[in-house]
Image 1: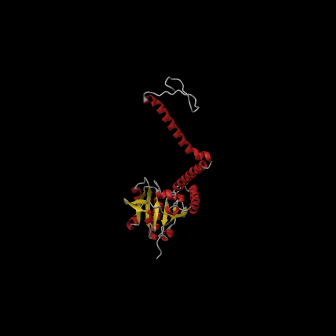
Image 2: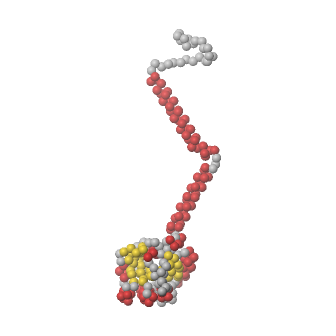
Image 3: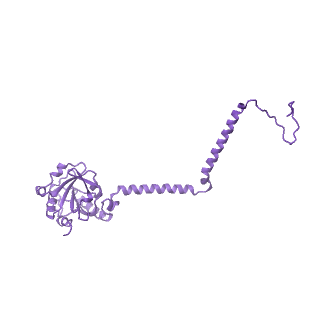
Length: 264
């Protein structure tokens, strides 16, 4: 523009404009702020476009992510199943194998249908079921001391249920164990009283010091071998366990007890 305020001649052929230059630069503060806001919004939009680009260009990322999530869920479910089911632990946890547990389970079911308890009135000529396994890497409490189950070998663990009316059966077991020369652990589950277990020890077994009273506070043996009534775990000198459950009157385990000792 010329000094008179009229439009001057433009040598470049541009359209005429009216430019007003403010006297104070602070008058442009709002315009500068708006300009910076637009720049920030543009940068955010560009970043968002970069993050979403892999999902827009191809359909591989979404199925891959979904597959990883499904695999993780399956792994968690399998881990929980192996942890809760004692039959899957095997030799590491001392549980019986699936095949032996199946045969033992059939025997237990047949026995439970005919003799649901171990009262002296029930007549059994032998163990109700037999299964094999190994003791878990846990402990039981004997005379106030923690005893690792893996150190118990060449002995019998008699699991006595709470409120078990099986004094006669326990007496037979202790008598047969004395004949075989085998130590017997009378093991009570969590909540059982040591005094009640101690009263089951016969005078002859007490004199021979062939019986120990123990408590399974963690219920390791019950959960591992799924006991039925009075159950005896026959642990040989190699640590292999044979389970005889549902014992009543007139059972005979003398030959099995003798095999627990190391030959010679």
